[in-house]
Image (tube, rainbow, N blue to C red):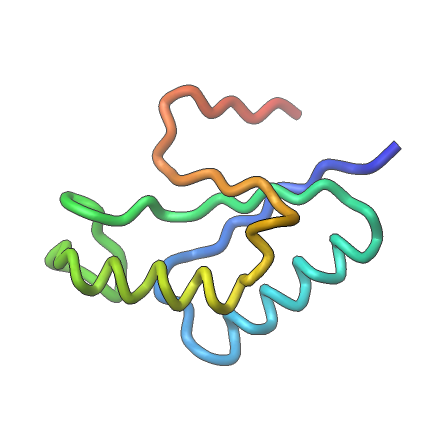
Length: 90
């Protein structure tokens, strides 16, 4: 039975951290694990270290880089945070 794995993909990761995390996610997929990536939704009133003033253009560029770097969207579940109905059970 495949194992479910939740991976947090922080916003604004610099090179090479984003590529290392993408490689780790790919390794999990190669091992036939079900991967869910938790990411920032971005947009108005979302702040991070790269976008302290919640500027929409910065969010768009960040998400574009994240999606390009983690070009795995066809093989994983993507969850944007915050999600009110997200429940993580252990």
